[in-house]
Length: 520
Ligand code: BES
Ligand code: MN
Ligand code: ZN
Image (cartoon, rainbow, N blue to C red):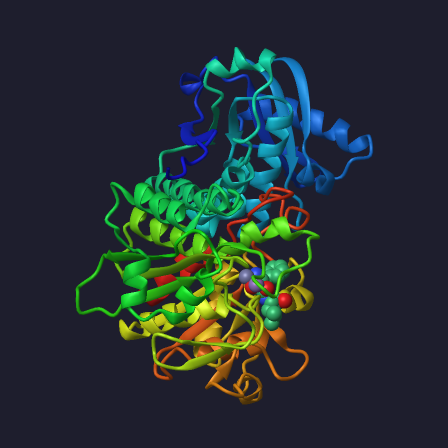
C-alpha cells in the first residue's frame, strides 16, 4: 500500500485590499509594524485603520516589547470591530529583516501565532513587506509563503483521534490565508504557486522520512513514488530484486541480504528540454531502516534510523518538484532502497562485494552500508553521461560531529561547482558548508584483499573518507558533489522555526531544485 500524503492544511491566495474585496467571514488581520519617521507604525491597511493600529503598536512598545520581540512571536489581540475584523495579529519588521530567509522565518512565526490562536481565516497586510523588498517582490512573497506553509506541516496521522474531537473533525479544518495587495500582479501570483508546489514536495519528502520502517519498506517507497508521480511528466521505473541482480548492483544486493524484504531501485526521468541536452542527475540514499546489520548499532536512538532514507526522499521530492514546476531542463533521479538488517544471509565483516562498475569492496563494517548502495547508483548515473551529479545521503555520524544539525556538508573537488552550490544554498537559505576530499582520504579507503574497503584505515575525517569512497564510482570528467545530510535531515526544529521540533526536515529539496535550475 503506497503512502497517502498528509493533506496540506493551509491554502494561500492573493486578495485585493479594497473594502469591496473584504470577506466578512475572515475575522483576523495580520499587520506588520516598522519604524516610521518618528516612531514605529503600521501601514498597508488604509489611512483610518493604519492610524488605529499604529496607536495600538505604540502602546505595546511602550509596555516594554520591542519590534524584534514582535517579529519572533507577534502579539494577538482580540478587539471589537476593526473595520469588520475582530482580531489583529501584530508582527514587527525590525532592521534585521533583510533576506528572504528572514521572511521565511517571519512567515513561519505568523503561521504559528494564527495556529495557536485557532484562527482558520486571515488576511495578511503584505504591503509593508512589499515596500521593504521592492526589488524582488515576487521572491519575497515566495519566501514568506514557503515559511508559512512549511511551518504548517504536522505529522500526526498515526495518532488516533479523541472521541470528543471526532465530530469536529468531520468538518474540513483548512486554514485560509489571503495576502492583501494593492493591485494584481501576475508575478506575485506565480510566486505563491511556486512556493505551494515546492512545499508540497518538501512535505512529501518529510512524510517519506517520518514514516517508520515497517510502513515504509523499499517496496512501499517505490509504490509511493509511482503514485505521487501520477499526472506529472515524470517517468518512473522500478527495478525489483531480479533486475537489480541482472544489472550487477552488487552493493545494493549485498546490503539487502540480511533483510526479509527485497530491495528496489527507483529511477525517475524528466524531459523538459531537447533530448540532446545532458541531464542533471540526482542520487539519494534510500535506507528504509539501518540497524547496522551484523555490526549492529547500540539500541539508544536506533529508532532514528528510519530517517536513513531521507537522502532518497530528498531526491524523490526534488524530481517531483522539477516536474510539477515544469522546468525546462532534463533531469534523472536514482534511489537505491533497502533495509540494513542482521538476518541469516547478511553480509559478514570481511565479505567482498563487486560494484556495478566492476570494482571490488571489502565490507569490514556492515554499518557503513550507505556507500555500498550508493556506489552502484553513482556508477549507473555516470553511465547516463550527465551534465552533473548531486547525491544526498545520511551517510556518516562523523558529519554530525563536525557540523551538528546546523549545516549540510558539501563535498566536491570542483571549485566552480562548489561556488555554484554555495550560491544556490544562499538563494534558498539552506545552510551548506564546503568539506574536503583529498587524495589522502582516498588512500585511507584502499582495501587489503579487495580494491577498496568500506571503512577507513585511519582514525578521523570519517565524513571525508566516506565521500572519497563515493568518488571512486563517478567518472573524473563528470562534475559531482556529495551532500551529507546526516545532521540536517531530521530534528532541526530548534534551529529553524519552519521545521517541526522532531521529525524529518526535507532538507536540500529546495536547494536541489535551485541547482537543477542553474545546471539544466
Ligand atoms: N546512517 C548511518 C549514519 C548516521 C549515523 C546518520 C547517525 C545519522 C546519525 C550510516 O549508515 C552509518 O552507520 N555510518 C557509520 C560509518 C562507520 C561505520 C564508518 C557511522 O557514521 O558510524
Ligand atoms: Mn549504517
Ligand atoms: Zn546508514
